[in-house]
Image (tube, rainbow, N blue to C red; front, side, top):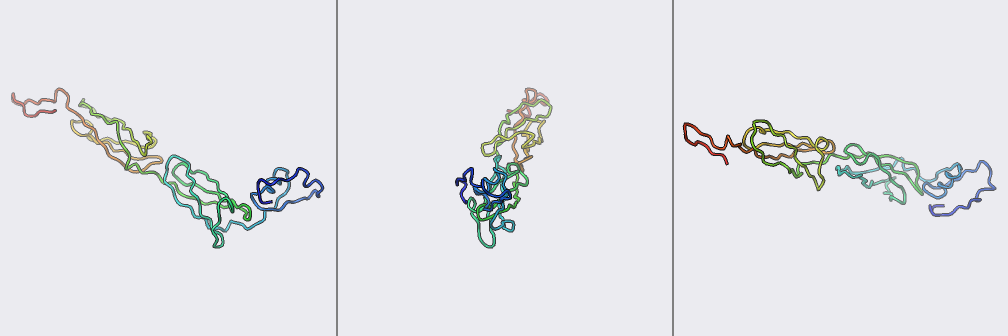
Length: 212
């Protein structure tokens, strides 16, 4: 009984011995029926435990990643949905994810293969929200808005910020470094404008410097 849609009558095995055992392929209606009715089941077919599974590493996107594995057994590339089915775990965040391959129909048993989810780089992220400020004598630490591929990242979770040259009049630097599922660095800046007292510097009764 190869099809999952195949029908097995309620009384199909009523007159069988109490030590009945059903034999069949994995992933079939026969296997489901045996499980539903508490009947021992022997899975037939070739084991895929010796198969070579290849799966490519992925880059973090924020979504569950399901790369299709290539499963080769004894020189033959098997077909997903026909020879095996797959499931995934730990496959969203950066780190080590796992794909489980389970043989069906003419194949049996399972095997697992790990693949890496690498952290996404923020080097091409858009940094915004850094407005001009007026000199006060104290350090400014504005929190930038960081957007990557349309997603606004979370300060403290997805990135950290370091400020420099952020007290005196001039150009302050903001260094954004990826954290958590992100890596890489992007640099931006903001302007510290002179306050009223610094707009005109007098020396010996004449203007020696004028700030905009």
